[in-house]
Length: 346
Image (cartoon, rainbow, N blue to C red; front, top):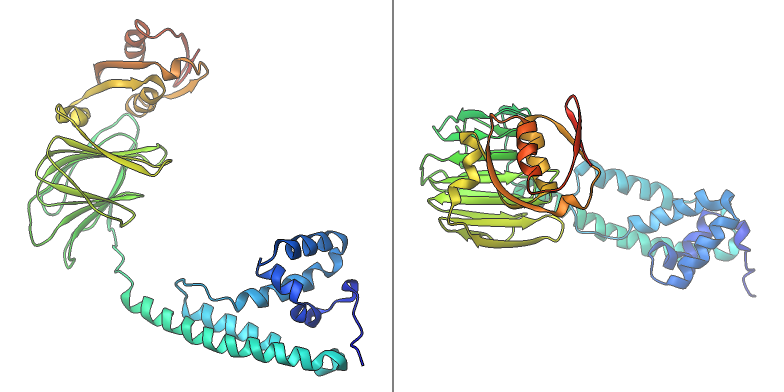
């Protein structure tokens, strides 16, 4: 006797579980099945919730290598276990054997996956790197520069609109700090306790040296320039790049490409700490970012063409923004209007 075929519109939870095409949809295995069920959802919205519950169970049984908390492992197992204990009275006789077979297949797989999940949780909980706890934070607003001496006597100049986090370094294997923005470091040498500067995407390991770091989160470019000593730079814990004196490491966040260039006049990279603003063949649009932080103003660049014009020159941090823009205008054709601290470039 052939099993009676149930119309899709009458599907209940157990019907979805034993339907091979629905399993393909849930696991995104066959495009035809994916399109079929997506179209069906549009035509049968009242059954969508039940179908998605079935999909969630199927996806739960897929093992993905990731760090799992103990609560997550046991929570997911309990939900799966409860769902697999279907009421016999709700299941038609003709397909109970099929459902029972599918459930036991899933339950067997789930048992194995649970063991894997618990093993991964145990492994990662033991081998997870110790998180650095930063007890101190220095926040420098726009228009200001701050000088800080760290507990190990390392000297740090922090540029405008930047933030530095650090601790007292006691009881730690390394001396670690976290930077958002720009800073110049003159690090006290300690071969037994490396000094590490963390940024959002890059880490710099140093051994008694002086260097500048430019790492503003909102900007596309990260760079660090070495004045003396030696440093290594790594992106997201990847392969470290050794930097020599008078070299600059540049990382493009958008393209994920990095490069190392020679910087003969390397001290110009940190001239800002001495109150000097230096631009070297820099796009006008990029200059505005620096001037906005240094002079504590906001720019609105309406003339997009002028944004790509490049400029070379230097200014004192004591110069007003009107003086600076007046000098730039002699070589760059633009006009501007100022409304208090907002400047519109036309």
